[in-house]
Image (cartoon, rainbow, N blue to C red):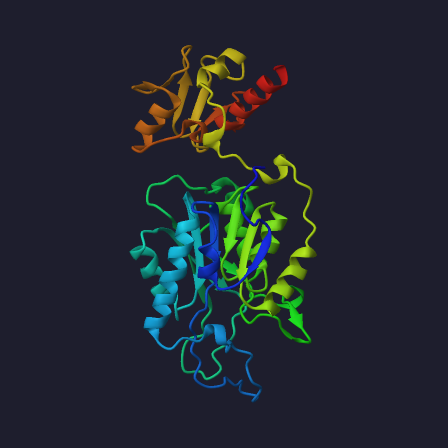
Length: 365
């Protein structure tokens, strides 16, 4: 993993904008921000049994008006944008109280929004007064620093995490409760502690081992704890000494699995060595004249020709070109064509044969 001229794996005490301005430009791969929500509760909140709700009423969440909150938002977003690499991305989480104002500021400052993720809380706090719908979700915005720049998205890792289904933008996860909720003298250590499951998805999807993840509102240290688990470097900024103490103790207690590339790195298919379909013919993994099925249905088949092209009715071409003609859209033939075993009828997707070829080449090298 590369060395970085940064205060890696440290909590920096102070105002986030002031501290950010001391860091080198274009030095951070990912920012995760959980800023104040500007909830502005006017009165104490009580349950029907007259017990008081432990709501967010901390000084750090209080602003004079929307204009003050907007100035604060633009200041920290601008500071984060300065330290982000050109290929970097930023995540910010919020509720209906603030996320739309944050989103507008993001766009005004030149960020390009990639996704908005809805965190659906499986165990939300009810609306005790019964005057509105229960607030059962929060929103994460994922944005890149500059539109069109290359950025990290570990699509296949997220698909594997989701039982081989493409992960969607609605994440059903519980609130931080039970053993995960950090308490000091029986009280919540931080009012808005986020579940580690959210940060696990954020960091696994948009960073790689050795990358630098910065959290300008470090709080109880969830970002640092998950980054350490996944072998990412982290930098936390926090102005409250009590939160720093809690976060540091939490991160110190994390003992990650020793790093091994095959445990933590998941190369995309685009990064794999290029293999011509003809190589499978030359190696004997596919034979001239064998039939391929376009998709598993077997309704459309093609025959393999000696030059590595396919013939499907009146169409002849590469596995990609024939697939493109059949579906009327770009096609990765490795994922769409299946080799048919004429004796058993079993089907094997071509990508598995490609991987078998690469393993054979590696073993023979």
